[in-house]
Image (cartoon, rainbow, N blue to C red):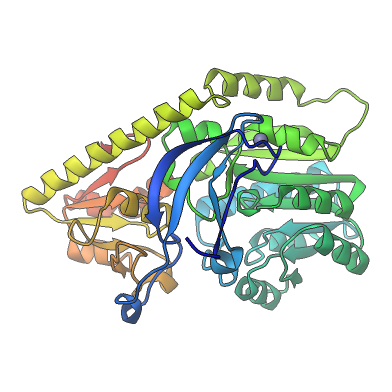
Length: 415
Ligand SMILES: [Zn+2]
């Protein structure tokens, strides 16, 4: 390995060195590192992808951290593209505005604000907004769209700068970004500094309970440093005197959890019952014990054998297969399973900037959505399985014309 990678020898929440390694997904390129045709002959940087469980607090995290500059400086993931995701953001903005009686004096800060999609909803409702995102390219897009944005990594230092410049925030949001952050203590101390005394911190992240239950191994990749259950998360926020006042499980991203935090108050916590219930589910699922992860790794390995056998069978019948959705998770799956261009003719994706590029590692070409109907391959393997319903709805004509979809996760289905 090289200096671009830092080995994680201590738990990033509790500092324990009692770490149990599981699920070796191999040495693969960053799954968002799409390639141009002229770069295909060059060698790609590849990094270990393996998980570990902290046997003390229960945090699941990667064994390595790839330098964030390599992963995020020119981040290609833009939020404002899926209907499901936009609906999720709209739901969050309206509920927050209403529940916390925001007005034109309230400042809403979004950590990992991406292209400003969420903040533009708050802005339309009439609050003050500020985005914070280390990706320069995305900050520029957001600013152009009228969303003030600081192109910085969030931590205590950035929080102090923002507080001086804009004042304290009534609401801080951090959606699908906590998993990207190495220094969780820096994040929490920054939030603690920036949030007003009566403020709320709202976060949403993929829930480990869903990941393990549904075998969503392909959501594990270099950008996602941590995979949270509630137990280690509560251990962390407790140190900064925050408490959870609302907890909601959501279907997005294969199963997520939305948490609203406030500074600890003496009054009885209304979310306690739900939290206790979820903690008991986590315990029953064995999330704090290595046995559950040994079993998970075995199930992933079985899935690999089953899917590969099926694809090989289809190819023997001289039928054609393509992939659907050049998502990062698809690149994890194809790299780990060894599914290359000899199995998938190409991968369809609706995102214009990906079309014409090639997937990292497996070098499968990416084509626009219209190609599916004009070309009519026999099978389309849905790699972006979290959007399977949306995709199949959009491509009803393909199924009518005799095409079949393969959904790999949580278990293989042909539709
Ligand atoms: Zn720990």
